Amino acid sequence: MSALKVALVVLNDGHAGGAHGYEATEIRNLCENAGADFDFIIYSPKRLAASTKSRFPGIKVRTFRNGLLTMFMLNLRHSLAGYKLLKTVGLRYGQFERSLIKESVSLVYFLSPNPLALDLVDIPMITTVWDLGHRDIPEFVEISGDRHFEEREFFYHQTIPKSFRVIVDTDQTAKRLQAIYGALKDRILVQGLGVMQPVVSEHIDNAEFPFFLYPAQFWPHKRHVLLLKAFQIVCQQDTNCRLVLTGSDKGNLNYVIKVADELGIRDRIEFRGFVSSSELAVLMMNAHSLVFPSQLGPSNMPPLEAALLGTPALISNVHFDPLLNHPLIRTVSSQNPKDWANEMLRVLSSPKSTITPLVINNENSHTTLTTALVEFATLRAEWSSSNMDRFKRK
Image (cartoon, rainbow, N blue to C red; front, side):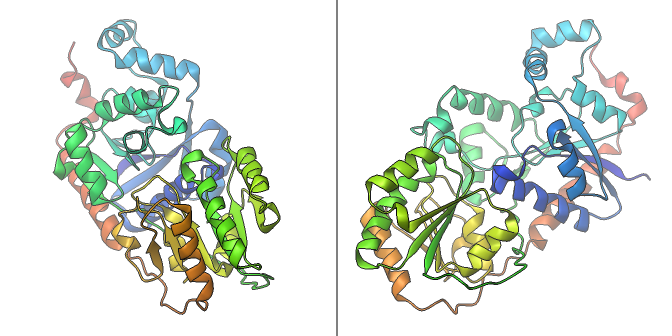
């Protein structure tokens, strides 16, 4: 019996932060653990095709388009009236699904929330839900403004009930999907974030002063301003410490720099911009502590990556990932700058941590996903591709 073909759909480049790392980790783990019964093929946005091929040289890569025309046809096809019209003129499948059929793909695994999931007519899918930020923090315009709230609600209501499996980070997210969107418990797989051990190519401890590290893109919900206000208090009691900020500008960087100037702490802050994963690992290794005041949870990769390297982390109280229950990771109980400052000063007054680093075993979660793939393969054996037209409503 031939291997089941599974499409792994990626969406993000390196500047997308944790999303990019998550996709890459999932692909590597699947290809290493799923066995010879499955044949994986990666689908990537056309603009990312070259970088995707270089990251995964042993896997076939195909591309898809997600421009305005694709989105227009997607929305037309997703409505029942539009679908009947397109079916009449021989366009029942979109370009993406036609490519999947040509490659004999039987199952599509969207490694990130992707609007193309709405365009699938016949091929079953696995979808991913990272968070419900539009419900948790709708006051942040980048989360719910510009009709993002409505887009997310429509997307989840349409894709979750139709998915063979839904991949989530924590039990908390799983329970909320059941309560809000009616997802069936047995169809949800709690995978965690699949964080891999950061690779430190060099360990150069040449920092002149102790520093805090916050690796986050410059979105308002990342709460950089809260951190700056806390760091100002810290600076009043410690004249040596520094704050290092990494991450791409998502529209809020200039404002954050302006606040730093107004608080009189600009000279104590390094704005590094986007850094490579290897450079970030070195910064994590050398930081006195990671700080992570982000308002979006319940899980995030940087605190886990820091703990894997033995570096302490302070995280906000919106996090509920059980992996974060580790001696190296401490939750700040409020979003008050004084409370953050007190915790940062406590860390500064403590010697460099000698606590045993975090160890994450991804084997169990990926065994669960592989088990689901095996279950799907068993079900898929009940029909032949050549006979699919017999089951389609005329």
